[in-house]
Each structure stands twice: as C-alpha cells, then as structure tokens.
Image 1: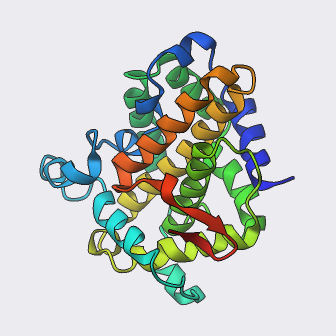
Image 2 (image 1 turned 120 degrees about the vertical axis):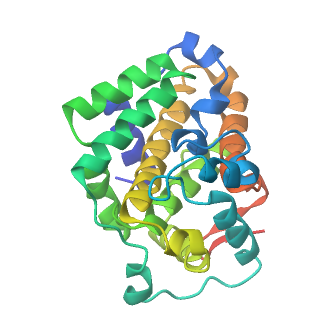
Length: 258
C-alpha cells in the first residue's frame, strides 16, 4: 500500500475524521507542528525567546535555524548519506518521555482543536501510534527513531497537503528528502547538541503532525469546499515552524528543489 495511503488509513483508524464543525474552526494552529512542541506562532522568528524561557534539556530545538539550513540546501544537489552520518541523528526513545510528550501535545492541541485532542489521547490509549508508524516507515527506508527521517515524513506530507494531493511519493523521493534534512541537521548546532529527549519530542511531533495533516486531507474529500482552507493551513504551519514557504518547492526522486 502506498506510503501516503498508509498514513491516511492509520490516521482515520486511530483518529476519527474531524466533523464539519471542527473544520469550521481555524485549522491553522492544529496543523502547526511548532505549536505542538511549545513554540509560539512564527516560531522560526521567536525561537530564541522560547528557548530562554525553558530548561536547557527541555527547550524545543531551534526549528528556525534548521529551516534556514534546509532552505539554503535546496540550491544544492542532495548529498549521499552514509549510515554513520545518518546515525548521528538517531535518538534512543524513552517510553516515559513519549508519555510526557503526548500529554503535552494533547494539551496544546486542546486549545485549538478540542475534538482532535480528545481523539489523539484516545488513540494513544488504545495503541502506540509511533510504534505503528515505524512499521510503515521501515519499508520506505525511514525510521521513527531518526530525527531527519521524521522531519522528512512531515515535510513531504505537508507539501502534498499544500498541493491538495493524496498521491504517494516514491521511496526514492522520501529518502532524498531525508538526505536533505540530514545534511541541514548536521550543520545545525541546536540539533547536533540536542539531548535524546529533545530529539524524541521533535521527531514524534513530526510523525503525529504527518498523521493530523493526512487526517485533514482525507476528511476534505467529503467537504471539497474546505480543501483550500486545509492547503493554506498546512502551508502556514510549515512556514511558522521552519521559516519558509513550502508551496514554492517541487518534489522529485532527487528530493525538493526550488
């Protein structure tokens, strides 16, 4: 089954599709991964203040810094990534960290999408979405325990949403985007210096956001008049978090390009 279809099936099974009432709310915050990890709107700009207000081990990773590296790298050919380089972005997951992070994700989502927050909490009470995600990431060469892989999954999913597309990206394109993210991440000190807990928080937020984006995109099939709203919300969430407009990009088997 194609990757994006797997995403959608998992999303719709684990998190019930939003109602028309929910769609009538502002979808933007619900599709903003920066808010999920505790960054203010326009997180790429306000990251420094957010970090200063938190502890050294718990403050979110500098997504704006990572976004600058990502956007700059789009002007270059994606590098080949060997296993040793990619391993620098791995993290050792902790069940306690996941439990605490999911609780925070639910609380933050509750402020902008109460129904979605309730559904997310219920989904994790029934089964571990991150462990399930690992099962369909692996055949595409991605791992749920690698920060670059998780960001790439979100980035591709969000881009597809901005195009209003449910087409499945190729395995080659997913891995090429992962390489682009990895090349940017290993040149971002806030990422390379991050703790396992910080990496886990961001990676798992990206995976959950990929599910939420897929949920919204799937639900608009019954409400096509809301497609433009979801497309705009996905674009705004990615821009607020990473600092650039992903709608300007093109996706191919060599990754993203301008």
